[in-house]
Image (cartoon, rainbow, N blue to C red):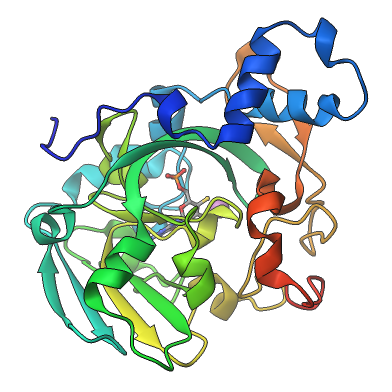
Length: 300
Ligand SMILES: Nc1nc2c(c(=O)[nH]1)N[C@H]1C(S)=C(S)[C@@H](COP(=O)(O)O)O[C@H]1N2
Ligand SMILES: [Mo]
């Protein structure tokens, strides 16, 4: 069901220009790409071939609906996503409970094809529809002194069979530093392939932070809090040795139990392949400056 804010932009209109150029280069044929320096571009272009709707919506992590990859697609239909509202509180000028419709009103919804990298070393490419989180933060007015943004997922035992099991300390919560939250790549997603986001992917609204491992991209958000303290983050709290607060994709820092140097692209059948994992999931040019001077092995 299309909503009135659904964008009519095409992929080429919104894909970051250097990625778009890589797409064009590969379509022009591989012969011209064999010079050193363009090989990386070629790999990036291949990475941006989107996964199918079927793959994106049937292979999920959403522990509120079970821990199996196929559990969310089977179980998440019980989640009521309309009406929906988000409580925005903490260090903001205009705290309050905002309906989904209020939030969407006047927002510029774009289509963005992002690489997605799960900490479990699989990946997809997903065409999201969404707006920049920075636009929402500007609307509510972030107060001086705020340094972090905390997010919370709905916690509904009646609708979410998974929260009756203490796999995590529910509700699912995540956090970003304010500059990460304000980065133009950070999206509040409401759609996939131009359709409303399906429940298993985090309906009606979820975060997408493409340079971080998938678990930072929290689903079905009901609360956003501006704070001056590092927020509670579910996986970090569950196992701080394995999951850091930052969780930036980094092929040089292994998970204690497996390598992060490569990833398995979901789908593709006969063409299924492992690909090298890129620093910051391929968004290094855009986001590396956020972490200048930080030890990324200590702050993983
Ligand atoms: N509320 C909530 N958000 C969540 C999760 C979850 O279990 N609960 N799983 C995370 C993990 S580990 C991943 S890999 C992504 C998966 O997003 P997708 O199913 O849309 O691909 O969602 C993230 N957001
Ligand atoms: Mo994940």
